[in-house]
Image (tube, rainbow, N blue to C red; front, side, top):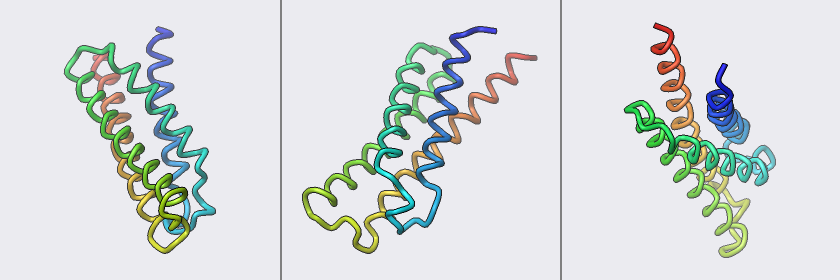
Length: 127
């Protein structure tokens, strides 16, 4: 067992599960989506992105690309949350939380692809 690969896989799967937890619930109900869960998702995704920089294979490039997409979507969700809560004061109005959760759901899809690529890579190594 390689400890480096365990940590790498841990953060990729942890990013996916946190992202899934944030997206779970009614899409337009702010009480189902907590800002700290979005913050934790962003931090773990950034750690996973940093860990992916070391892999120079083609699979590593695909993993890094999916991680960049997830980071971009999560940053956009955080910007929408911050802007509507502190600048425009429209947080809680109809459609705002749906926009935030939709952006986070895009990141969820990117994280699912990332985990699928990781599983494919693990299966290919065993052969």
